[in-house]
Image 1 (cartoon, rainbow, N blue to C red):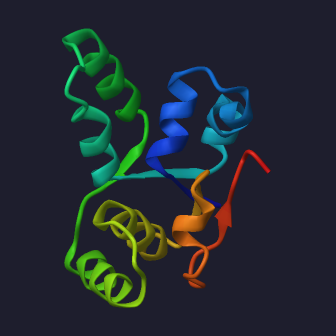
Image 2: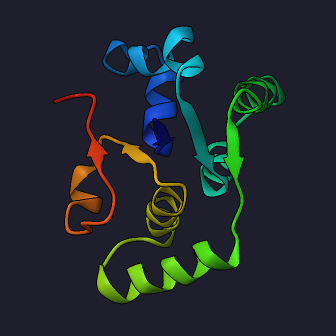
Amino acid sequence: MNYLYDTNIIIYFLKGEPAVSNYFEENFIKSNNIFIASITRIELLSFPDIDSKEENKINNFLNEFNIIYLSKEIEDEVIKIKRQLNIRLPDSIILATAKNTSSILITRNINDYKSYKFVQIINPFD
């Protein structure tokens, strides 16, 4: 299966949240394709008070996954999504990336995405 992790899921994992831990277990990662949208990398590394130690930790962590960069196909889907839904640009990029990679989106922000019917969504906190 293909899974795309929303930024909030990675933040929860890095903070030790047990609700998301099974999505980061070695067996789960090895038996599935795990994707991260490039906007997630941007969001994670752009906190104003991040220090170099945290930056290195995040970069090393992200290197374990397939980062999906913006392509024309993803951009075109972002445009469609932004025309349909009233959501932030980063959220529309994550949604378009999930659709483009035929991934199940793992997120806690169900309300951000619930009206978009082209991507399956899982909330690990449910």
